[in-house]
Image (tube, rainbow, N blue to C red):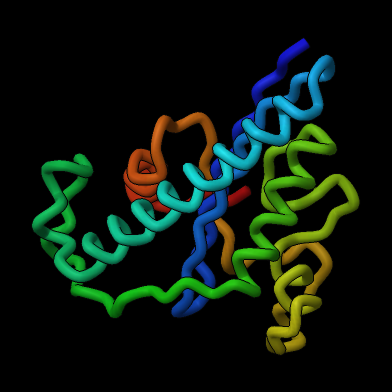
Amino acid sequence: MKKTLSILSLSLILSLAQVFAVSCTIDDDDDNNRLDELTDDAQSDEAELASALDYLNAVRKNPSAYSKEIGVDLSAVAPLHELKWNDTLAKVAHAKAEDMVARGYFGHVDPDGYGMNIKINEAGYALPESWCGKSNNNFESLAAGYPTGEASVIQLINDGGADN
């Protein structure tokens, strides 16, 4: 039996950004075939991640040039510095995406009540103590179901942030 699971988690962390996509095909009848598919998916995901980060940085560099494409007026938005990939933060995002798949939820707070701030702090980033409340999230944006990382970035810009 094949099941396709796909979650695209985009997290913007301070002046750093990482994009993580989990995309896997599970074939209970053929483990070798599954391994080949997962390897192919991982290579494809890396290219998609790089493309999404490049697109986000292009928008940050010249927001008004993307107003029409994104569907929101960005003419008053000042250019921002480029975001850099960070392997540690990407691992935190990866673990979060895998946890959402494994435990069947989609949200900024896991079923145990922990937000992204705790996970980032546990990964070695010293956050102010006031930011380390159990369910706090000052960094994470989530999107799922979009065909590309670029489409996910566009959705997150259009969303303008969420309270959940």
